[in-house]
Length: 139
Image 1 (cartoon, helix red, strand yellow):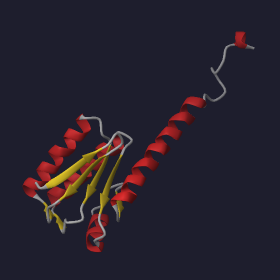
Image 2 (cartoon, helix red, strand yellow):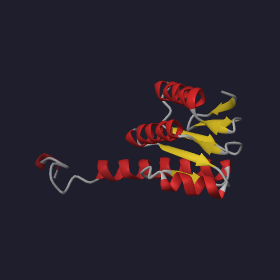
Image 3 (tube, helix red, strand yellow):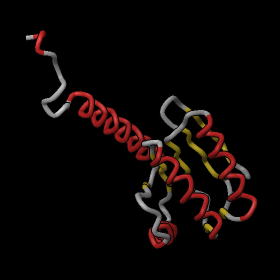
Image 4 (cartoon, one colour):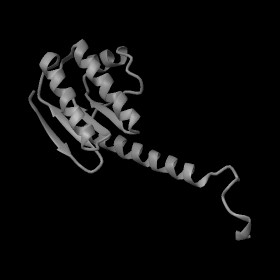
């Protein structure tokens, strides 16, 4: 599989240099993604600019990676401007799949997701339903 990867603290970006995600390429993409999860990445961006087709096994890999990212409160973002590809991915019915036209927008989406998770975590920490927040001796 021909690709370049870029990692930051918040995300892993994979720029695929293949015309199709199928067979060995799909398997390699899954293996690469597993490595990202092992390294603690829950936000993954696949730049599909050169990809023209995705076979059934490629869709299965995208579905698995998307589910794993979601389970880790992360985000999988696919980057493509190809209308046929977008339509195909939409018809694949992958829940909560994010497809954006540029890598910059994908990075912004990752940061927004991180902020939402941070705020959600703060709300959970601060709200105790009015019970158990303090002891009587504190008053």
